[in-house]
Length: 52
Length: 206
Length: 254
Image 1: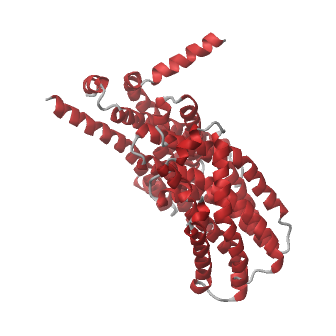
Image 2 (image 1 turned 90 degrees about the vertical axis):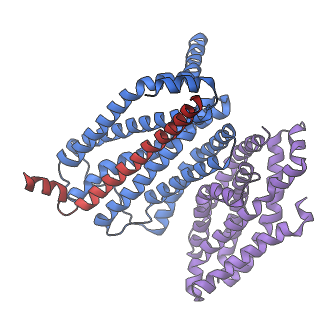
Image 3 (image 1 turned 30 degrees about the horizontal axis):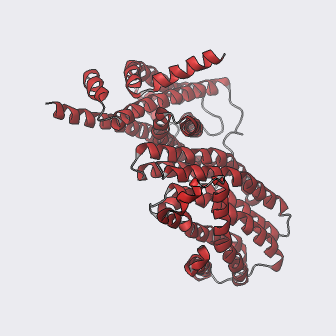
């Protein structure tokens, strides 16, 4: 079981390349998800503070 | 109008020559090396100096209200924009053409490649003036670097075709194809880019 | 015919009005989130684990499942932006300007992903991080154009004006991108007769391109998700002081 996982991760020694690509993908998409939500949250908080 | 101030046509000229002379100093004064580099060097210098010059095309008229008159008058405004670009090109692009002749001596370009160089520079710098006019109109009253960032990515085809024409002339190959493509780009660019420039100038009046 | 056209047009305008958009997008957002992330993850898992290994490149070729969809997205988002730009310029529809603005950073991100993964892929297969190949060069220029659009928008304070400015720029871009592609191709044939090619690798088996298609679909859905999120943020920021924002936003969120 552990051997299987390690072969998948290493991918014949090319794992580093593939996984770093995957990391870049998720990192950049993560930023794109985080930023608009942060903007919305900020305005939400501002409005909340004004209402109270 | 632009003739009145000598700085408008002297500055890009001097800038062009300085940039050109930096390449042999920075890289190597070797003849063959410089000859292989020459088309690219001349074209990059021409591109940058025509961008530098285009900055002022609308800003002064915008400030003193001449531009308002343009749009109030009955003439179609894109013709006026075209006239403006043409004048500007005559004032700034033409000195660059002359300077490119001098720089071809400095960079050891063979005489046979002078004709394609001049032809491609005429077509290319005019296209750059049109593109630069859009950049200048979009960034009226903003920093010059912004309009350079806007315009430079779009200038790649001109740069490629221009250098390709000159370097294929150095290798004694047929260069007319590249000039024809540049001419076609210019023919499409004149109406299209002028119309969009009008649209971009009008943005500043809202 | 005219009646139907008017009906459709009015429907679009109505759906595009900020308060209504905010309302219906809050309804579909959870669904979109669920579907897009599911397809995205399934496509990637299928591509990265279950598809067969390429006999020439080995497992490195699996980067294709990240690289190709993001490159496709990078280009088609620009197409989308140009359509939005046309609508903004001709009919002055407010929401299409906002769409254009919120699509730009997403397109730039996908182009950046394509560039980065491409160079990571290039290292084991070509031996270098970067080659001045026609395709790479034109993708790089596409990234610069995205950067120019984002830079121009952020430099203009009046946001409706900025929308129209970048709509002009996106129209210039869509006209010039094919020329850039063609001219870079010609430049290639002049300078380097033999170029590396990604796609002329042995034609793919169905086992390989089925997950690729799913990945492309997943990336498109992710784009729709990101666009909706960005647009919601944009709409709320622009209309901060309107009454509907304080009403709907405060009630609907959480």
